[in-house]
Image (cartoon, rainbow, N blue to C red):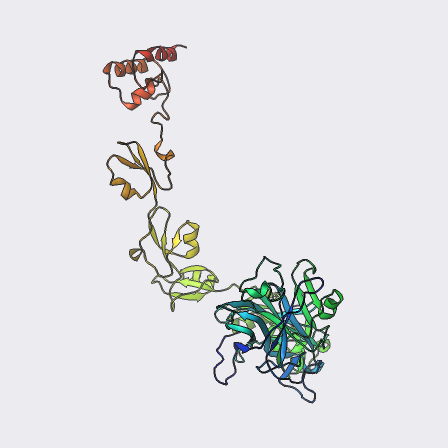
Length: 550
């Protein structure tokens, strides 16, 4: 696991972002196609460039070895680098290192890159991703990728000042069993790259505008850029840029030799370096579900294979039939039989079922009736007659269920719902562990119709509306004026006084009684006001008689 630790004293850090003071900058002109600028930054004294094949000669495994294409060291001093001022969000800077074949498989211990900027005037940061490949990034295979998230992998916070450089280092915790293991894909090489996911402020859209003289637009957003050294390209085919699709350069991977052919000649090699060591393990037959490959035991375990021993060969190995064996925690391993899987505490998935992709059901929060919680598989939770909250959910606050109070659109509150269940009801989740007795849910609002004045007041809760004499609340999500402009005669048929859908003598008798009374009610008026005068009188007799005729 990639972890973050502060650079304190002299102990080895697992992740660090270090600021370096720099000296005066000046600007070169733009390139022919894709706009860019190279800004020199003085950071340290000279040092020897590593051999292109990897580490200093004469060293033998296990190392560690340093791989880099630059003669410029990464600590502070007086040497120069160029900040690549047109580097855009989504683009990668990467360096491929060719090393002796007998050093594979290897473990990447440390990777680092140097960012630079002419000026940082306010608190700001860069978000980024680190990538590692077998072979080169254009044709090889990515084996690891880590992105800054502001927690265990911090974003790069910029130091404030003029002419600053920023050194980003990463390392997998040496105690973590999941190291970055790189096998040989036949090219005797590996690649380390860094992608800018988010500048502090990339101006003028996706493609930006490069840093034109004297200080350009990308450079005025408190952004920091990957840098190259200043003494020419020692490895033009092993330095790489992944460009996004912008005018002058289509999306894709380009090595520096290819860029030079397009009129983009950078001053030197990327300021990227890597430290690695050999695993120094013998290889042997590694039995997978339907194949055999020769790998070290470490690499075989990473593939969930069955290692047959150092020095064994696939040609002479009779691999057993194996299948996926699922553990309660969702892990998968290959086992030769269902019995072997059961003895390992797992559930056998069948012969030839692989572990990649992982077929094992993942655990989730299993809620007990007393509100406590265990991380279990769905099958185990259901067998205990408890409440499984879904794969990938987790117990919270030291073993409690991820459920809480949910405020519903009608203003009521329901306990014991998960966040997804509350959302499905169009409710507002109040947080894990919240209870309705401690929550005040917002009440819905609607139109308030005041009969005495004929006015409509919008945005009122039912309780507030009921305070007003002669007022009627029109319901949640009702709006003025329509909610209060209801027709009292809706649904009433002229002439049908008794509502039986037939207009006959019974209705005529009721019509006559209502008219003679001189004070018909609203329903009687609606059923008999044939002339639309809003009164029931002799003017309506002709209409009533007409409805009685066949």
